[in-house]
Length: 428
Image (cartoon, rainbow, N blue to C red):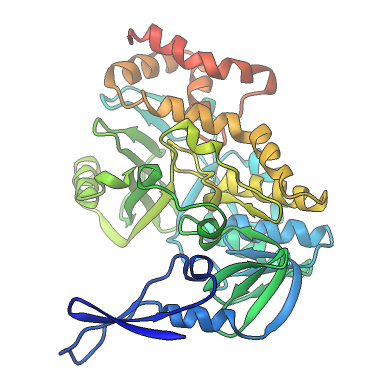
């Protein structure tokens, strides 16, 4: 049934369904403003209703919403295990900017065949305090530069070669029904037994099974792809106002971005322009970009479940992004592999214990470190000492970078090491 209601000076077209919370989740009205020649168009709830009332055209064991790193690799792992899987995505490949991920190659070699992607070795980036104290990350060892979009595309192609299905359509609505899930698209619907949300920070799956990411747990980045200059090595600089400046190499030249809380995003691009002009002088800007990522501000953020009886959240949809650096590629790949293991063993709920055992401590440690690292006194003291102690540099890198891994015997030090370092820095 369709209702037309009057709100102030505009009319809203609404649809009425049996499950309005499930069907309408995450969608907007279509508003028509009287007196204007053109209407302002939003996604209609009517179209969502129509999507979920079409005849089911296919049934599969597992449906993966999203074809980024987490979604593509989940499809690949499940297809290799013989699980009937479909991956949904609005576009065949991610539309993110040419974002470059820095990683130690051994971390990615754990998940992917070396032939799946093209990688380039570059010097380890420097980590710089608000007052300019610096030390080399990753123990000064070279790291790997990877084109994230290219990597996602290659993984998806490998998944298709293994028998994973890919539907190039946007999922408009999700509804639970008869112990499974109904996914509605513009052209039809699909029924699946298990649903995996790998659809990023604005995940429709997360909105349906859990909740949305709160504003205080979101990280907004603004940046540029730059040409006309080169640098000996990239760097991560912590700014006094709680923002992080990241500059690294990319295919077109330099990728420079500034990241910080969503609540203080206003004017961030202008601040980046001023910092780059001060650092490099005149530069050729090829293309601007923006990024919105989950970044936990409190440890209880990771207490929420990321799986249930017949659903799993992976990658950014689960909030598994490094709270400090905003890097999430390693966690996306790891969560995809662990999700496939949980599904293969017959209980998706096992995923929660798997990811907590695998990398949960690293995320929690980064949240604690995030609360103090922007203090000039603490960071200057720590970075000055880290430049002279490779052991201390490794400890600090393990907090800052998601791909800096301490051995299992050293994990027990994580909880107390920051307190010790803060005491050495004279913190109260």
